[in-house]
Amino acid sequence: MAHCSYSKFSHLLKLTTANLNKPTLLRTGRDIQHAPQRCKYFIRFHKTSGSERSLQERQKQHMARGLPKQKPIAGVKQVIVVASGKGGVGKSTTAVNLALGLTANDPSKTVGILDADVYGPSVPKLMSLKGNPELTDNNLMRPLMNFGIPCMSMGFLVEDVAPIVWRGLMVMSAIEKLLRQVDWGLLDYLVIDMPPGTGDVQLSITQNVPIAGAVIVSTPQDIALLDARRGAEMFRKVNVPVLGIVQNMSVFQCPKCNHQTHIFGADGARALADTLGVQVLGDIPLHLSIREMSDRGQPVVVSSPDSPEAEAYRKVATAVVQRLEELSG
Image 1 (cartoon, rainbow, N blue to C red):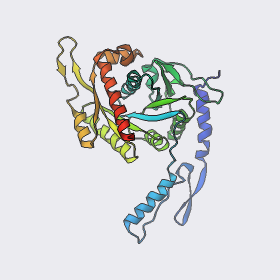
Image 2: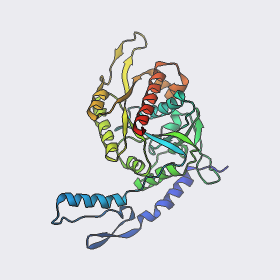
Image 3: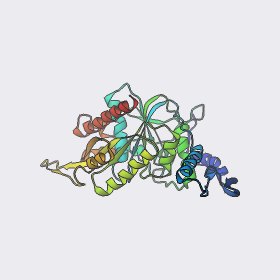
Image 4: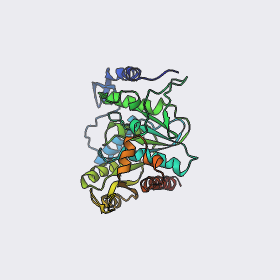
């Protein structure tokens, strides 16, 4: 069985993006000018004597022609994206435990994880997976599997400490291949661990794939909530339902005296949820076992299934399924 290595994957991406650097003709009004092919749908409108509203409608119509048509991922029923406005809030840990929580709550459901953070993949470490994915007879990458969850990540194609030094076009092509050139089999849910922020990867995924809903992860800290709100607003702009907010690291309980301390503030995510008109999907405590088990590649939902921490993630998974049923009902 052939394996897909980083060098093969990178070479394929370069071939795919090579034509994007060639100039092409782009018509703007009465002028014709050279522009990159990736901008071929961008049309500049000159102000006319018509109303501003009419101009905006024409712009929307022309821009809509340039947006890619959404195409479902083969074999995947529903796609759930887990996002945050900034890094360091526990998004990847939440995504992994959410996927495991979905299967723990209903073993009949099949769930996969896609690590879309090309520059900083975390899923291989969290899921204790290493190695190159095998290639099927159809030249599709076969996900690596652990805890019954198929996973795909850029981290499987590079060394642990190797940096990914790619420009935007290469990243977009990589995301496309991680979405389309993977043999996911039949999945009820594909959980996508998004990179932090509101950039090219987020737009590429939401414009190319039908998303059932977005889960926003944030700590209660004001500075994290600012970026979390930006992330939620971005999904609304691209017509992706926001399922709700997970308030991560909500409270720290001393393991010796059981005193609770709100290190990052209290109920900040709940206030944001009220502002956005969405619900809080759950509170995840700041607990030593979550960090230790994550670092060992043994997520708390499978390593300590009877713990309060695992129960918190399963409650989030239950709330996510309920919201999906509400949206589809």
